[in-house]
Length: 222
Image (cartoon, rainbow, N blue to C red):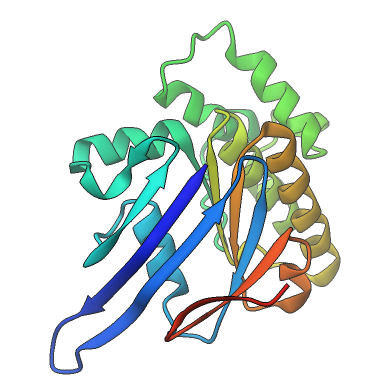
């Protein structure tokens, strides 16, 4: 599903630095992996490259049969919209939209017919345990519930790849454990490949495989 080959990235300037050096990774459909590493080692840079938000200096990133590194900005925008889902630490739930409207956004952006939206939104909300909150506003939800909304929104359009960047950083331990279990289970059920970026070993252990990102590349540690 996702193939990363010899990916490298440097940043120029007075303190020029090589952030990623010959990073390679293979993830199959339905597989969920965690990437750990020290602050500043390049985890977020790697995620940005995979998402096509930045360009590598060398290497290739293939999502299915598409080489992301060869696409122009417009094609990358369409690829992200149709084939990727994102879950962030800060939730990014729109405060002026209801829970159902937040979850429906990717469907609207991808041109899904209005008649199909309610059923798909309802099913995703049930998957994350928010069946009774479709009409709720974000201000009425806990942090854990808002992250569940973010997971439902990330998966409702059935993406090929889900990218989660420290999704439990703002949650208490109990909510974090629930969110991590939901993220993995929902991604597996939807057949999406998943990458979890985290500092937490406990969070990483919910994944199928764990990698440590170092200055020499990715090292499998579990």
